[in-house]
Amino acid sequence: MTVFSKIVAGEIPCYKVAEDKDFLAFLDINPLAKGHTLVIPKKEVDYIFDLDTETYTGLMAFARRVAKALKRAIDCQRVGVAVLGMEVPHTHVHLIPLQKESDMNFSNPKKEFSSDEMLAIADQISSQVSD
Image (cartoon, rainbow, N blue to C red; front, side):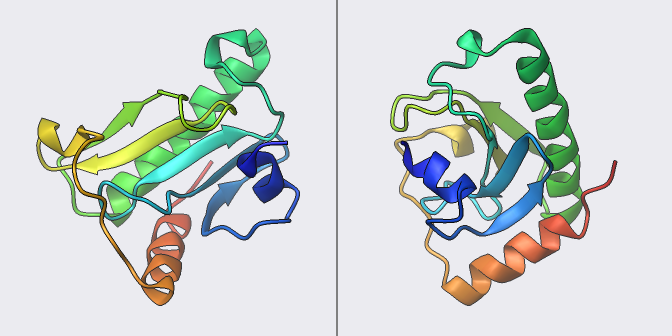
């Protein structure tokens, strides 16, 4: 069971941004930018291209909804999208607010926010999620 499956099961807390019956979006705890969000299927599958078609298209549609909310909530030029999947063997989509392309470099130093700041950021994004 991955750390993300433990988050889905409620065994590990997260800063939840959005959720439906199949997908969950929450703030990355090692963010590259304010509002850096992870979007996952609740079903644990290691590699994104091993997802069945319905789950894959559902994940992308859910990520799109979250990205639009993120863009409304956080001052940024764009919301970048990355799927790396090397660090946790559970499909996850990174949504990263960008001012410039180099903001998406995963070698950049990670940002640090207090728990209260993370809660406020999650609430700010969550309030902008719509259907």
